[in-house]
Length: 304
Length: 276
Image (cartoon, rainbow over all chains, first blue to last red; front, top):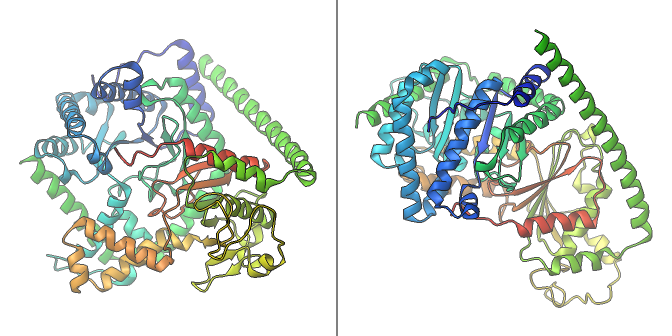
């Protein structure tokens, strides 16, 4: 199964897709919490890992719908740090599935280049087995020049860990550097936001969670302060294009009401950037070093 | 080209249908709210209703948070007082209010009807001492010396005051940045250096400083009710609400004891797996 499916639309689906594209604003960034794979497996009396595998097939369909809808960025919650609490058998099964899918991705990079898809894995990948780290780092480096669709896969991720990582990056930022250190007054929400894993992504416009749960499970808690949260009862492997289109309609209806709040947020962010010297050479050099260090780490992991 | 025109027309039609439906729904909700308010005025021992409703629940949240969206114009002091009394009746000990509106646009200042707590400006007790003194004792809810009522050790009514916290925007992202600044200023100390040796130690350290700054010696919110036309956290405590169950109460619809009991039912039914 490929990362982007060859989904065959019916005429009605094509019409609905085009109608929504033409009439309302399409979200730039959607985040998916793919919940319900195990419940689906239980309901169909199949193995848990088979349930996760069906969930991945559905992700390939969803990515196809997003590409065709014109959505620029998709983030999916694949594996939480909290999921390490599951049985060894299930965790190992999930890692094997990830190994298989990232290996497949590396085989079909031409197809990803054709669609301009860039893969970014967000999370503490050092918690993963070494061979998986290598595959992930290689996939990220191999697709880093693509810029049409950004696919962020949250793997070994929790939002609290991400925020801690951002604080850690600031605290350790001056080590081994001759540049001028940050001033305490440079530290603001704006700077921390730039130290998150999602540094180069806009905040999600909509968060889509399946399986009827109405919590966020420590996913992108920092970034989703102005996102529309869309919860549906359907289990992830069972979602259809109609569920997806319904979420787009919900977003289009809610967008007008959220716009004023979002404008206020943008204004606040701009004022904060100004008052905390965000655009000073000192801060920009710090962020440049952060990017360079992250890339160095990826190269080291890929060549392990 | 023809196809695009058809799609555009269909889209416009769809948007008009949605807008009309939205308007009708809002009118219906207001009408329903008016009728329910009149009904509640003549009726209903809400204490008995809520007492009976929570008796069958497997779990109750310890900490409830109310999120009031910037576009909401129906949540006022009277509604908040009503929700506080429901929360108090069912025995939820902690309640936080995050009102995203500005003072001219509906923001409710809790100090007007709650008693300030000695812990700081954002903490209150409800009911305030004066209200409690005026309140006659009710049948079947005899107060015992330890402050709880007979038969309701953990759930159900009790007369220890509800602890209310008014959360502001500054308690969210900005507070995490403040904590980061504090750690940065002390980064050469042994304590911070020890935190930097392991990610979990730093997480625990940040949690401790955040809770100290917030004055939150209470559990993280387990249940959130969002009063808005859409579900959104509006920047509510990004560090603390990671496992909070959110329920949206559409602006304009009437919130009564039944709505509150419904939210509690939904919360009691959901299973928290904590990653397992």
